[in-house]
Image 1 (cartoon, rainbow, N blue to C red):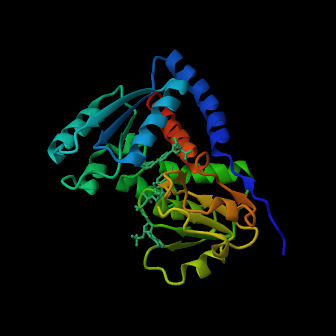
Image 2 (spheres, rainbow, N blue to C red):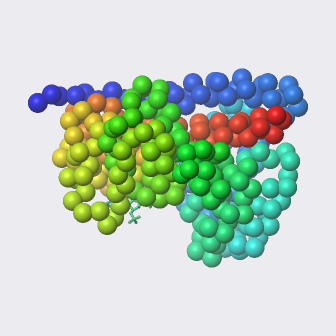
Length: 286
Ligand SMILES: NC(=O)C1=CN([C@@H]2O[C@H](COP(=O)(O)OP(=O)(O)OC[C@H]3O[C@@H](n4cnc5c(N)ncnc54)[C@H](OP(=O)(O)O)[C@@H]3O)[C@@H](O)[C@H]2O)C=CC1
Ligand SMILES: Nc1nc(=O)c2c([nH]1)NC[C@@H]1CN(c3ccc(C(=O)N[C@@H](CCC(=O)O)C(=O)O)cc3)C=[N+]21
């Protein structure tokens, strides 16, 4: 049997290359009097969101994107949040608005997402943007799925006619990624917690995307020899170490390509968030 030593899909490196390109676009925008600005709202203290906010601030600073981080107490009311979003929608100096998910239970996620101006919706979660994406004519693309597509394109990994299995059907990752993969002519299967014989299914995938949130759920027996494996999961293992949904060491022996954790999908998510903000700022002057 062929032994593959997987090629690393280096999201950290590609995100830095993209940051360099964005820096130049931001310089041009600033020369025209427009300073791209992203507003981030974080309610409470979800650990994955904390990492995200920190890394975002760092990359925005490097590129020259202004950020305003609003940290609100976990008891914030839905009315208060809606009022803040309305102000940001009306603020012409703000090009992108992102509300960190998950939200505390007193706030309805759907209500909040629908309150964001779709033209400032950098996450691409508004039904207008999700609808456009599923119809094959996206306006804003959710950042994590977009980052995955950019990484596959950078390494010239073909998608047309490939069997893609996505495990996870969240609005953040699985569903929009399924739409993008369909748009790129892949044959897509989406698995979730009700899926039967999960590993039998994933073993047939040419490209496997794991977006579950269960530390090292997928090992060798779940993967076809030579498959491309994308690890979206961000988890802490028993020893407190940051690990993905893939058993990286074992799967590296049989996959052809593999995204590391950290340094794979995570940095690409941030790069795509920055790109979306710059895209919106450019559209505001055209
Ligand atoms: N690197 C990055 O940029 C990002 C990383 N993440 C990480 O990715 C992971 C997933 O995030 P997110 O999509 O928001 O998570 P959610 O919890 O919203 O979704 C998890 C999905 O996995 C499914 N699932 C749960 N258990 C199983 C199982 N045993 N077998 C098969 N499917 C299962 C769920 O099924 P069901 O729908 O039936 O409940 C659900 O569809 C997390 O670790 C998160 O931290 C998230 C966003 C960005
Ligand atoms: N409205 C909204 N949009 C999101 O896109 C969103 C969200 N809410 N809530 C939380 C999840 C999670 N998420 C991550 C993004 C980047 C890293 C990231 O930078 N990861 C690095 C970090 C490593 C580290 O610093 O330890 C890496 O994987 O290399 C992690 C997690 C976006 N999410």
